[in-house]
Figure (cartoon, helix red, strand yellow):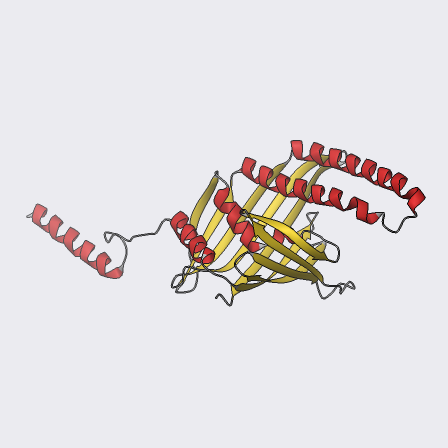
Length: 267
């Protein structure tokens, strides 16, 4: 009797949770890595899109950001991205910077630049997503509490991969800066141009050596959140937080870069 009653209760319990959607009912959960790959595949098939975002940089623990940027961009002909950026509206600097990037052999190259270049290259969300795909050591996790019809995945790079990724970005920016040094001497009289360029190269080498020293013992964390439309499998929003910590003579220094970008107008 007790055995039959026990089996009866188990059947009733499983039936109840089955119709309730939890417990004994098996709920299929998609692999967040597969969700990410589908989003990249969908993105790769688009010729055009638009995006708009914000970026902010903080170098202390006081909660305030030192610099904030607003930017927008367009993808055309599948391989050309134009990004326009400016400092936050609260800044007195209202100049717009424009950067054109072209994808050549799966790499984004600077084609033209209008205005001084901050970290605009880093804000190309297509390059960010493509870089995530290539990085080996990373973890994917599904996030919950998002609106119906949407999926959110969290992607975190392994600590060593994060240091390497951020270091490579800084190294590339330093190399681009070095290539621009001759242009900086264009307004200097001819008889002093070589001397001026030599001084600039000396200063560059000093700063490059210091950067290399900082990065040798640096630690970093890099986390992305990607919101995806379930119906189209296309990215809707990409946000990131990258923090790098390194040692200076006066102690540990920390820099945090936060970006948040929305995608729309896919074609």
